[in-house]
Image (cartoon, rainbow, N blue to C red; front, top):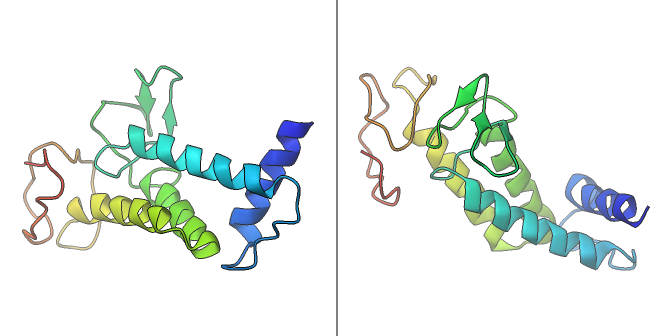
Length: 147
């Protein structure tokens, strides 16, 4: 039951909280914020240059999007990279903690790197070769292994 209360508080903070208005009187608010921090650290540790997939095995050896994915692929459709980035952005809006904004920017960078000149996306790997018709050749040196 305690786990459900903690999860409920965490969801309420992210879904309905507004900056500066988190109700710290809730007995689980502090724990929920710590859980949000730990979840963010974990997600960032498994990201591929800021990008995410839909599903991961517990040992992280298997990953999936619409199908089985490699260790270096990311997914553009929800619940992949855009959804995770939006959650980070919402966490920043609610808490004002810049680590969530940084995580959201990383997800945005991963999406921008693979965007086509047409404005759309196709399947890509952030560490793979760039294909023709990619959006400009902006400096992406902060994505260390991107080719």
